[in-house]
Figure 1 (cartoon, one colour):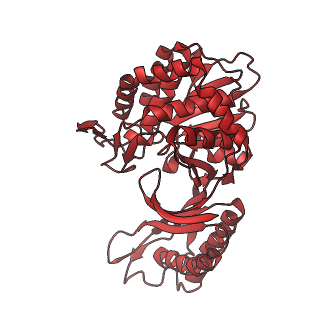
Figure 2 (tube, one colour; figure 1 turned 180 degrees about the vertical axis):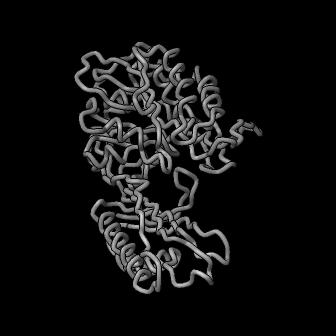
Figure 3 (tube, helix red, strand yellow; figure 1 turned 90 degrees about the horizontal axis):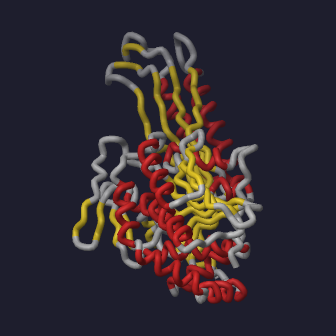
Amino acid sequence: MKINFLALSAFGVLISISVQAQVIQQSYKDQVETLVQDPAVKKAFDHILSIDEQTVQDMITLTEIPSPSHHEEEKGKVFAQMLRDAGADSVWTDEVGNVIALRKGTKSERTFLVEGHLDTVFPFGTDVTVKQRGDTLFAPGITDANRSLAIVVALLKTMIHENIRTKDDIWFAGTVGEEGLGDLKGMKHLFREGAYPLAAHIAIDGGGLEDIVNGGIGSLRYKVTFKGSGGHSYGAFGIGNPHNALAQAVVSFVPKADAFTKDGPKTTYSISVLGGGTSVNSIPYESWMLVDMRSETQEKLQGINQLFLESIQEGLEKENAIIRRGEALTVDIEKVGDRPSGLADPDSPLIQRTMAIAKHLSGNDPRLSSSSTNSNIAFSMGVPAVTIGRGGLGGGAHSLDEWWINKDGHLAIQQVLLLILMQGGWM
């Protein structure tokens, strides 16, 4: 049964969600029940609670270090030191800025990744000081994703303190370029052709325990710039006008995109930002736009992309056909974002494990959904992956009023620990 409803997303935005009622296989429920009764796991859960105050302080420390996409170096240094202090077997920063700590396994036949992202959407100059009012912490970036980074540190601390090792190696990481025009830079590097093979990916980035992302919303983003010589609006009249070409392109694209997106997997488009021109009495020398297109499937994404590129050429040709003098206009098409789509089967072991754990710890039925997160890359490659929540209560993500309350926040850390143990072959 599929249910449609309005809800707050993991990032505090009101969205329409289609949720397919999911069945958790009994074998995975049984595994969770057995695992939580293990004395070593109970001790680990107790340790997570005992360091909870420090985990919150780690979150505050990381939040107060500015880290817009492409500028994560300073936060990465502090995060790396936290991982060293936790006792990682080794810690390094790769070529693009991902900070990675190794926890060796007992067999080391495979390696899987557990991570939160280092970057935020806020530019330098934003006040990221954490302020507390009552039980609520306020600061830009506190939930997305500095809480996730603090969870990564707490997990490593717990496994080392309790001498827990899985069969598989684990990379505990803070990754770069997840937000906006960061374009999943860190993930693309880790999963690039010829990279060290990763057998699975657990991303921490979202809301409650029951909010489970098993699909990646793919996206293509462009900056399109129409160019001409520019000139006086009266004296140079008759030359090509880049604004006209851009307008013609939009007028060509929107009706076709509207028809294309009415059926099939959800696909969206947005002419998001416009710019160009110097004054009211000047023909502009350039006109540009930023465009975002998204889809649940790669096929639909490529379909709307083709319509868009055709419309750009149509707009250029229509304006060039009516110019009376001067050189023809040109257009530059710059792809500024490319996130692949993908979907993990709800019956796959990693998703089944995640749902069984979420049901046990929260008591609520898990909700599977698609979103745009670091897991997109693994989803698109068929690598087992999932994005799970950072726990507690939070909202206002990507706003100056972002907030978080430590209401049972430790449960999210326990959730990831159980998933690590099940995925990594501890049982």
